[in-house]
Length: 265
Image (cartoon, rainbow, N blue to C red):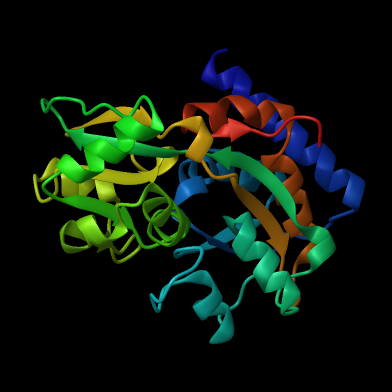
């Protein structure tokens, strides 16, 4: 599909959605978003703005973690947000505390954890759980993110593989955007031998080779979701944005970004 045709269809869809909710006035829609869905959002957001007349005011940060830029931390400080786009488990946690509207949460895409090495380096074997375990033990250094994938690796996967103690001295947590960087950037500079992060956050970084996703049997069910905050000033426009991001027309952009579109919603 040519980009012009695709963009036209997206703009028409956004306009139709806004007509359905009766939005008559342009607004500033404040969006907090984590890195994993940002590639999709950055491509589709302008079409939404063009059709709706609304302006997306975007703040980036991890879905969770101890960074002062993490979305839960930002919300706790009272930073404005109408929509949050982040790891679905984090959205659930925010809903349980009344920070977002529980009935507004919509899954946008599934995310897979992948492994990267520096461009030109030999690809390690991660074709099975045992192969992944041996690759971890053999690696000289390992980098992982400070968001949901890194939390899963350090609290669940590494202990379940029985390697947590053996690799403790060679793992490094990488702070993500906006003040940090993708794990793949560290790998590209040769500062770690192998890196783990959600595929959508690493595939567009130059200087790396994507080895592939970790085995399906240990691949967690990580989703990105959109939700309306309890303090939203523009909830209707926020819901229109979420519907726009889950439309069938958005699916090719989601897939191109290394994510799996959600069907049947």
